[in-house]
Length: 109
Length: 114
Image (tube, rainbow over all chains, first blue to last red; front, top):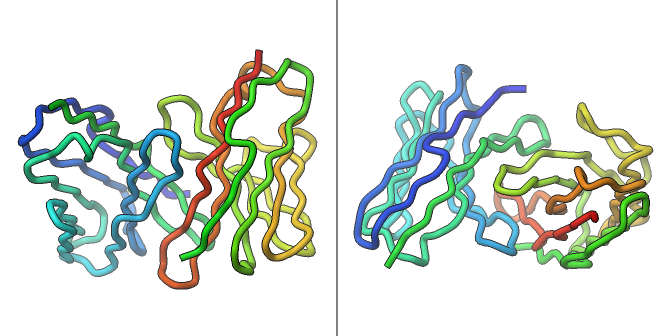
């Protein structure tokens, strides 16, 4: 089972700041998904990246997939308190979704 | 996308007892997945539940502790047996959504064992 490393583990920032969350592996990802989980809810899919070098945007969120498909990043511009939550990268390994350790983001107003 | 109803949403249980968690999906799905999320941590796959066959358990999880039923294509249960405080976690069910490549999750069951 390929291990997914996420960093940082925890991020506490002020509203309006920018931030980046990273997801890395020593092996090539077949594809990578990013999820956000809010307290009391299950994770919700934000994006799937498949092609090396791919960049996808979702409003203030920008997702990048490394050229070698061994790393990915999530960048949030002008963070808002509503962005608070647990951000998880995940890889589909066969039929199973395997998650990274997650990044807890807290955005203070 | 699929809609999942999971219940109970939370429970407080005595050690040594068992709790059965139910997961209902609004569409037929081949595989259902059960995850555990310990406080402040990520999700760990417990097992994959296929209709008509025994569940497939991940390393570190055994059927005697986490028996799973999958009587049809829209429903599954996970039982946490002979509970101890270490079983205090959030338990989530999930399905692979055929409308896109993502997975849909229930809201989870927050279990506290005292």
